[in-house]
Amino acid sequence: MDLASYLLKPVQRMGKYSLLLKQLLKEVSEKDPEYPGLIAAKDMVNFQLRHGNDLLAMDAIRECDVNLKEQGCLLRQDEFLVFQGKSRKCLRQVFLFEELIVFGKARSDPTKKGHDVYQYKSSIKMADIGLTEQVGESNTKFEIWFRKRKLHDTQTLQAPNPEIRQSWIQEISKLLWKQALRNREMRLAEMSSMGIGNKPCLDIKPSEDQISDRSISISQLNKAPRFRNSIAVTSAVYLRNNKRPHSIISEIGRAHV
Image (cartoon, rainbow, N blue to C red):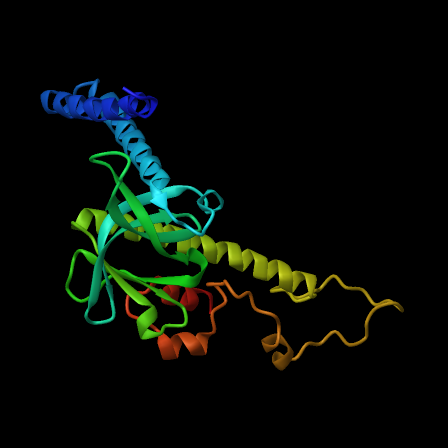
């Protein structure tokens, strides 16, 4: 065997460990003292197995014009049926990084029989998207869309099963909320540097050197610079006029207005 085959052996062995632990759990009662340890071992092995498979899949992405090493950790990767518009649909391998979603098309590896590579097709920055969890009555679909909210910028992803759909929704929701909190902190820091706070300055004492006019009009506040990638400071009027049902970005905007 070549070096690549030897390196693949530990990953394949992890799958056997997972099956062994699954069989052991069938023979052990939940009241047995060994049960919690077996559960913890199964979860750890399954995580390492999925992580190993994710890394192998990421290495198989070809012709990518984005530096994937700068996009944070790879959190998930699965195959989806992707809908764009009403009629266009295609099968894509989708990779969820902390900073980016990558779409690839599976092709047979010409150098390794039985292996697939993924031709890079497109990507979306996580800072530019919103999430709609529920699409009609389907329990396997969800939407991701650009904040410009144009029809052709919306992509509906159909997962192989409800479990995969739910896992992706949870991961994307966590990332969007994390972005919202980070952008809110940056916004507050910016306002603080401009002398704008959310508490009255009661401890300011009269001084000859003080600025006599500290008032700031509402129109000036509206002209304050906005972060292009911010979720937390989305305009309330814009959200009311363009809100999508069950959309994470809509909920975040309303929470901070």
